[in-house]
Length: 80
Image (cartoon, rainbow, N blue to C red; front, side, top):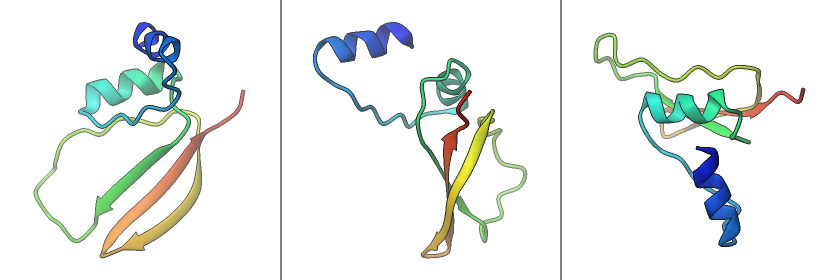
């Protein structure tokens, strides 16, 4: 992950949106290369147990809202 971010920085890209599966998202969280996370949940949808989600470690909930029945929560990492 660090190599990718360093390469993007060298060519002038300073912002990156990561949408992916649990493994990709968790790897970004684990190495601390995130500055905001949006979690969107359709709380009315029932599909069994679903898939495991990434775990935000040391995160602070900044805002909650509902849009078209979806619950959206915004998180920022806690400063160390």
